[in-house]
Length: 113
Image (cartoon, rainbow, N blue to C red; front, side, top):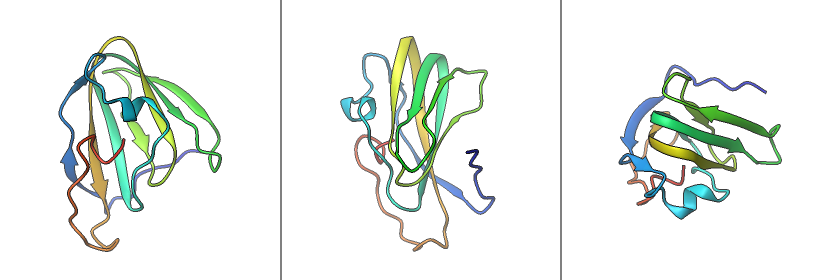
């Protein structure tokens, strides 16, 4: 199942850059973003495995690099990441301003990528 971002989504936050040594443990385990919050996983250096594990979606397992499109995180869908060797990445968060319109601060780990 291919999911695309809608054009009315607006970026509102991004995490710090994480490396294989600094990635929060919560991102390595299954987790999800809040309802209405999308994410884009941008790899700046190296390789990052991105797995969608939610039973509501077909499981996906892709390797993200600086040359691939960012990993797309859907609201409420379980997923996790796994560094493959040396990697640097960050997550950009987007939301629909019409979806509740609230500006909430993300959690320390970046809204749970």
